[in-house]
Image (cartoon, rainbow, N blue to C red; front, side):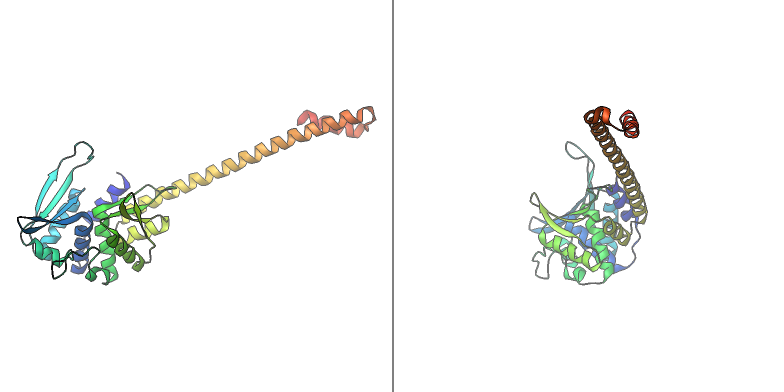
Length: 272
């Protein structure tokens, strides 16, 4: 199982009991994977996800925490889509859900970042917001030279809000725009491990750290081998040069060379 799938699978199974944390997670999921649509003059909340487990989790929380029913539809993989997509849609009282989760304010004006009740809440809410964002649009690459934990964001405001939430957790994340898409990226291996631990992906952290350690051991062994090879090559070149210099000196001195130097020189040339 790829690292991204492993994280999402584990987070999708994680039991979260505190209502504030469940609210923060849903708010982030709707912000990072969803959007508001207007059909026949009515607001519809729609979320597109890549994991069935996440879709079931979201529907459960929307029902139990916010009191709204939702629909689930599946779009099978085809063409450029590698896997199935899961669409969670709230039609009845969607405007109320949008206000409850901070997609819009009390006057139904869109909120572009994360809602104030998440941004300025407890540390556990920052963790939950990151969990929701990762379930929505997160990815984790294998440990290595270009390893990264990355979230694709709906806009710069959401990206900056996520960076701020990471800062509250003591983790440095960077917001950047790549080919017109806003992203939040964490590249430091220790920071990635710390964040995954905070999100509750403990099994994946162990697997990721093990792969990271194996890679570092291999890299160290390769560096040592290359170092030894380089030393051997340098020694060989030095020996050849020294032999050539001795041979030239013997030619210059000719019969005048002392016997003990001649013997030492011949040994040097012979054994390089």
